[in-house]
Image 1 (cartoon, rainbow over the protein chains, first blue to last red):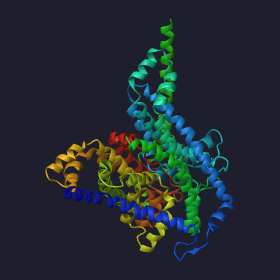
Image 2 (image 1 turned 135 degrees about the vertical axis):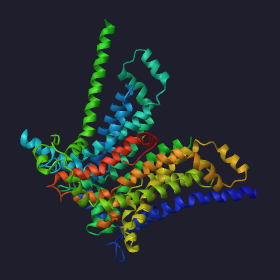
Image 3 (image 1 turned 135 degrees about the horizontal axis):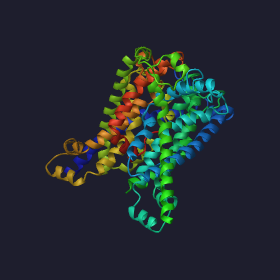
Image 4 (image 1 turned 60 degrees about the horizontal axis):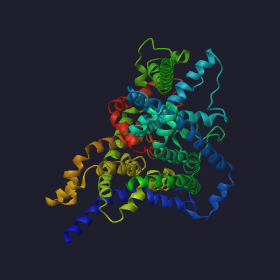
Length: 290
Length: 281
């Protein structure tokens, strides 16, 4: 008995470093964010309590609603285009016997590079109106305008670059899920004369539904947190056309030092993220109860 | 006849799927190929035709980019930041993965759910107060202080990935070790940790990559030229070097080429790591 208790106490020392790190650097600051959202704070001097003023101001700020709208558009774009490409391409790879690894490596390459490198490469050698591919085609072939400079196309242009870097990840995830499809099911389907399209819809897709659900949850979460490519390429411009909640909050905190407002926007992001997170935790929970 | 038409149809399908795959290969690689061919060209040559192959190998772009991107100090900061993050994250995560996989503490469910929520927590839920606390403590720009934040962010994912590796080690092995009189700490270091090696390699690659590429935390906390990582140094060239596209491409080449090489050599670990769980997008 005594032995056992000594053992058990030792086990708690295993969890303490991880828990302490996460509590100190994530949970405590997160609680401070909730507190800060109720104050007027510049980050340096003492904060003053203003109740729900920050939220009230935000709800009356049209930029806030533009940002939410952009985040929703971003989510819709990412839940469709890269998802469909990812499923389609991994199904194509499934039919190949050789070279699947080579294709996966190539498709994953943009994903393992840093957002800074990817964004700067696209801005310069592709989209620069003088020294980029765009400038070259405009001068020598037909006129193209920079899609990042136009308020109607900027969001789609940044999304295209982000999708270029992201879709390969979905291919790898879906491909490895499809590999788990039971062979006997596939054999029966082919013996009964099902076409490869029918096999995809009736055998492959139902088998990877849990993976698709997980990816839908993750993509939704990250659509509401999206920051890197927007901030690197357009900073939310032109004229707020690509403003997201994350860039909006960042500017409040580090450009105008309205940390209370930044915290309020941060909580809004978390609210949207949380809805998708519940879904995500719920899917993953069945995984860890196995 | 049916057989022949099927044969033609199948071949056609194979051909079109191969064409689609090659088109996607081109799309994935085009920006990187453009970096590779323009790295050696002068700005004037790039403006004339960015698609043309270089007619001479001009290495001066590299020296200008190396200086302008402050890569000498950047590479040290990047290695320190990623290295420290890997060490902290893997040490803490392997310890917690062990007890969570073995369910050997009261409240393991609660802690598991906490870490599960923490894997997808928005950085902006804790970024702002944390920054001003760091500023007050005077540790903004300190690579090691920033590495602790990156570790806290990577910890939940690393714990879950390692937890599945621990689960593949039969708990009979722990019991045998206890029978021999070892305590849990000895068992962990002498029995579990050696068996965990493949998992530790995969997870350190994922965590290292995340830390190397991370932008939001790194750009917020590593302020001032002396604190710049390689990516931040390169970013500082953007805009100011618009009339020296050769240097911009050489900088991109310096930044990208080592990662591409490393990725190709270690691709097995990357792909298994990515496929086995969620990786931050």
